[in-house]
Length: 257
Image (tube, rainbow, N blue to C red; front, side):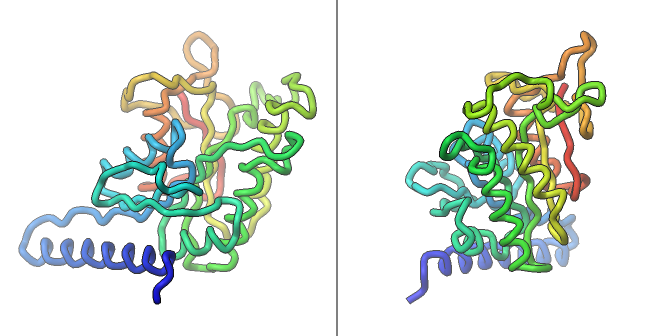
């Protein structure tokens, strides 16, 4: 009897084969072939940003696997969407889910016991992915991990050092958990990763303008000298742009207006 993860893998492989055959057939007929989409795993697919990344990726023709501990919460109805049960902090679960895929998006949030940075979902999931990538070797997918803007610099000074969140609070743990996540990736070897952070927080109900700016470790500021916030929809667009272009592998970028 085939296991549920095995069925998922077979389903993905079959769909990708069909896509390739269709592309070959179109080319042979003398027509311009369409780009073959990536297979993208999204952890946090039911979240405010994760759900928008799922939609953006599907709209662009990618195969998307949304992962949740409770897949019944994944109500997307699209022929290229697969709901999967999984735990972003569990190595075996992640290996079963991401094997044979192209990109893993980690859009996760969680404070952990005692609000310790080490116990945040961001820190733990980054360590899980790094270990999974090591197990998979050259076949490992890329990771795109959504980071926190407090890990950026402002005029060369780390924002985390200038903020007064008290140790032991959720805000302190979450912010420094993002910092640990970034350092985990930077210290990793033979792992293809990108950390994407907003420059000045999010505009949850903002429109999809179709524009944004990209920076590095320094906060992007607008004409008024304030951090350039960004809508969830444009941030999702930036994430899928990086999925398709792979221009920031091995580094952190920030996006904002």
